Image (cartoon, rainbow, N blue to C red):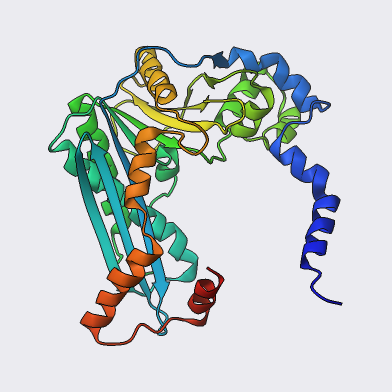
Length: 339
């Protein structure tokens, strides 16, 4: 019969086409489109940015590398870089440890973010940027919760993580810097929920519409670049002064929206001047779909672990110091063959 995998994929796409499309764009003939089209522009501001931007921007990002040894333990490497002007500040994590498979992904995510926090704290000891850009979501970091990981030597890591995050937000606030968390992918429904709530829709009518995420709504409704009005993130256990606000910015119609979290010093409202400064700076720093932010793109290129670097430097040093050849698991070998 031969290889039928591509044929099966075509059959799958044909069969599920409508479902996939409606999950990525709001159907113009649907009740949801009719509803949101009446209200969307009350919550969306069309703009291509203004002149209130700042070029005094620091940026932070992180990277990780994980490899499983033949004894089931994992080598975990992570580093965070923060850049400002001509300087780079870094933090590093390394361990060879056992981690539950279910906990590996969330743990390494938090390790990377913790490296970002620590590298930016170091930067703030030496520089005074007007704005800080951190790749990722602040609301997502809050929602990690106070979990304990099934991993050797990671007891209390969650407390350390949140201590570092709170220290960063506090130090940034004391320095006068505007701290901005920026992410391209998001399952946020804060804007959708805010529109539905303001319309007075009943709970039964809401159920089908609340499955729409904010980025799908904006891609479906926006006729021009712009941003949504900020929505307050519900109260959390994070001990910070002020309140957390989330909005979405669409830099170009053919690009994806960006989810942006920032902190307002007021508990019940956001500073509009701060919002305008964030919006104008992000529009100014946008350089297309591949470089959605010049600072974050620069630090991302610097911080990434690359295969040649890992194999020729880190793994070679592992073998040299430990004295045991770097045998990989079957899954690791197959992954390298595919590469």
